[in-house]
Amino acid sequence: MRFDIVSDTHGYLSDELLEALEGADCIVHAGDICSESNFYRLQEIAPVQACLGNNDYGMGYGPRVKRMTQFYSAGLRWQICHYEERLDLAVCDIAICGHTHRPFFERDSRTRTLVMNPGSPTFPRSAKGPTIGRIIADNGHVSEVRIIQLPKAKRDGFWW
Image (cartoon, rainbow, N blue to C red; front, top):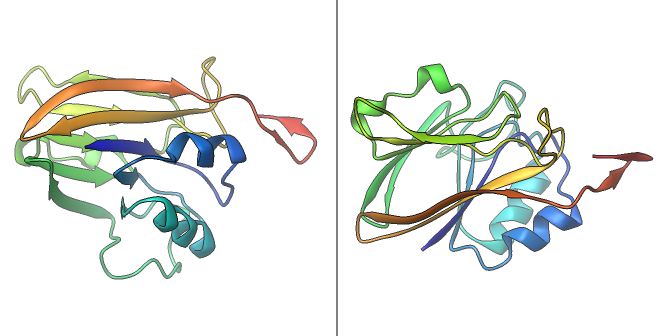
């Protein structure tokens, strides 16, 4: 299964992002969606698992979108929380966070949990520019993990 990982879209889904997400089996969003219509647009591409970010309160994403979201897919236990420091790595195989707009992935040395922050496709804060993450997994095994750089998009007269 192909899991495309996004965070911090902040009410804007670029054409470059939407094109990159085509073909995903599941979209995992680590918060700061900031738009109910964007949430529903993502669901048109693939099923969405998401958590609330610090800018999402008052949004109507449904009862499954919480501050901490857990789900089971591809034989793995997933946890999504906007804040890395609030993740409980002892209870999951894959932990997804956001908030910093800076991409990374690593294996926790103690639990061996895969931890990923996909960065932000909208307001990146790293030299990589706009990014998303991708995890390929099935039957309890992760076969690929990567950060994908998106082409820069022009928004409001500025290149992001």
